[in-house]
Image (cartoon, rainbow, N blue to C red; front, side):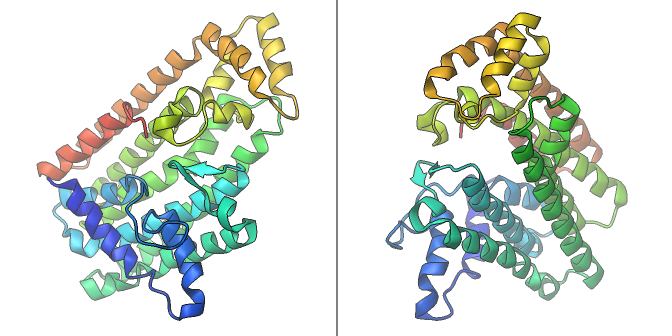
Length: 340
């Protein structure tokens, strides 16, 4: 199965929504297109890294595996990817991140006010993207339910982002709170991608529920691997600085695990350093040493593997079949090995 062809279909669907309505608005559309990897900072066409489009791929494959027509699901897949990218534009502002995917972020190029507005615009486009669903033969009730899932997911994403930011100012965060945070911030949209794809193929409640569970468990594993990359990832691959999550004082799973499992004296010292208002590059080696002492990296990898196995078990319960089902399985397994 040619996944690149699926991505091209999603890209084409998204591009129909990003056509400037008048010359004065070209920079506004240009900022969004820049973020998606279609334009450079001077708004000239390029092919930059705009991400792997994993969420819309999951939507299309979930639909196809259950016997659905991916052409009917394309508007939803495009909306899902636009929603994801709205969150990234705002996330870069909230994290004060100057780089994403080896390029300057929207706010770093054009300022926070314009970046906030571009993110807001992309959120609205995510909703507008779903309008053609009924024209493609999707029953009105299913269209309404698709919009409901998208809106509920967007709010859960905002809840998760709130918790993520709030945790930076707290000394103590437990693992259950962490799981609640990543459930909203990451797992909810991947779950919605699989659920919406299933909804557009079948009205079978068991298949839809299992598809959602597949995406949810996969999303938890995805974020846990992301936590590993945020500390130990290669900047040449991730496009972010090494140990970026440490310098941002994020309460990611490796940090929480180390604080809970280090010997008392080391945990106290780690806690004091991590509680500083601002961390410096000089603090990073010591923090990495504590994480190594606690075995944090190995533990998080093991947890990610467990959630991946749960995702694969849920995938089997969807009743899907054919090449699309096997591609979903391969995607899930590849998440553990990702380096982007």
